[in-house]
Image 1 (cartoon, rainbow, N blue to C red):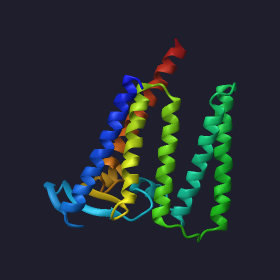
Image 2 (image 1 turned 90 degrees about the vertical axis):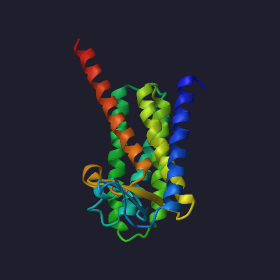
Image 3 (image 1 turned 30 degrees about the horizontal axis):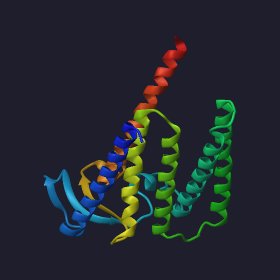
Image 4 (image 1 turned 180 degrees about the horizontal axis):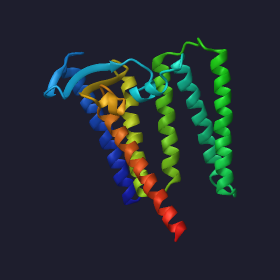
Amino acid sequence: MNNTNKKLLLISISIVVVDLVTKIMALNFLPFQNQVNLIGEKVTFYLTYNMGSSGGQAAYLLRHESNKNLSLLLTSISMILLMIYIILINKTIVKKKHKWLMGIGILFVTSIISMVIKKQFPDLIISNWTTSMVTKVVGISFNLVIFYMTRNTYIRLFITIIISSGIGNLISHFYYPYRVIDFIDINGSYELLRIGVSNLADFAIDFGLCGLLITLIVIAIKKIINYAN
């Protein structure tokens, strides 16, 4: 393991441990669903459990879906198929544009199949706990595939942060109350980031996503400039 990977592993372990410790502390020392002011009423502690199958961002995107859990599981299946495709196609001698076209084709086909399934089984009951577990495992796995396929240090860094934060929230399903523990409430955070009452892992995920997006934009701009020159 080279020095860069050692540092990324240390960052990953640190995020998971800090997230776990803060959640356990909140669970043991904060009153349940009782506001404790930290910085006036702008930043408060508010211990609660996420009883849903997703975070606020996913819930907002799926607000028009009649069966959110089914939609989330079907999306997870699509991601699994895409992961398999990426792994299989990665080392084949195929032009990049053809790889992209085939990937888009897979997403298009899975989207149609998902629409058919949702129409056929609109009232299928799937527990929030199961849905939350599956989506987190698939999300972590998908990011792991991206991590091992890229050599860009910054992309790897932000993917590491996203994976570690996902692991932190995933672990919450295996100790009381067997749900994601949220305890930080920042006034206006739901309107801005759709996270509402959250935890350190949630903030780390958003930080990782923003960093990843900025990195990809910078890479794209550099490629355009190089191509123009």
